Length: 364
Image 1 (cartoon, helix red, strand yellow):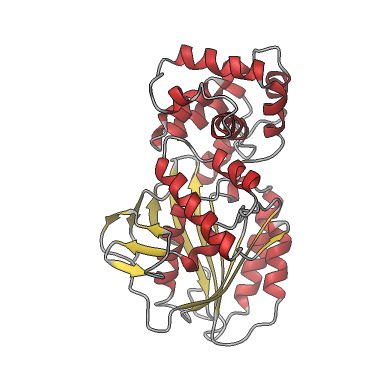
Image 2 (image 1 turned 90 degrees about the vertical axis):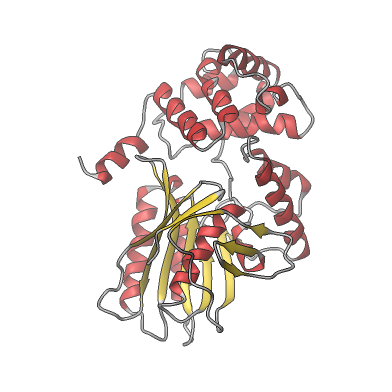
């Protein structure tokens, strides 16, 4: 069986318990055991006589693209963050570890807050995480040695635009520092592997950065910001601090976001007139899996077609940090086109923690 076939099998999980187990295992592997226990409790929620339980039980075509377990997990976390109900605090802090007790508590919450929890199943989670920008920036520094180091960036699935503001963050990537030294957002992952990403060349610059999302979140709105926080796994307090820093930056100067389908946005950006002396680069993180296959194919075709017209003065690049669902590994991959005979090759530069706690560099 090929890697593609294995990935397809994992992404097309139809059986409820298997999907719950996969998502819980994914959380546990990534150091979120408390979140994993809440997710495992969903098997019992499905059996409750509640609107939430019935909707989960009748979910058609259950796949990991739906991220259904993470949708409702956000609703549970919101109960705590909003002050509506604090009973899950003991689960999230690790005081309650018995799965039977967690099952019972989660089912009680569904019985009590059925009406409030049900709408959380309506859409996928918004989990744009600033820590992931460490990998994106490392990819940009690697690219800056190979293409024009002035970048016009556009992000797909930008959510609240947390990573659409990466030009305002300070990064310490191994021995390499880049970004404003006085930024309230400090991205300093544990650096693993051999060496560091290249230091930024003297003329390194992000001249433009914008993003799209089908349902962008306005970080200046307190209710919207709280909803975004609800999707953050509570096992990771450092992530909350990063969200707060992102909110501070967004309130001072909102990220440039547009409400648009990723495929349409990509097409629109690629059709914009090009000026020489800049690299146009698309990037995204942990969102590709949520898009329909047709959209994925359309974006790939559009990028490859535009890449065929790239020149040394007008390069095109694609930076992605996405999950290999067959291995649970999060991979930073870069493709670029500049009219060379190696245009469009895929370069695997690193593996990373899903929320940016560490980066294992393999770039050459």
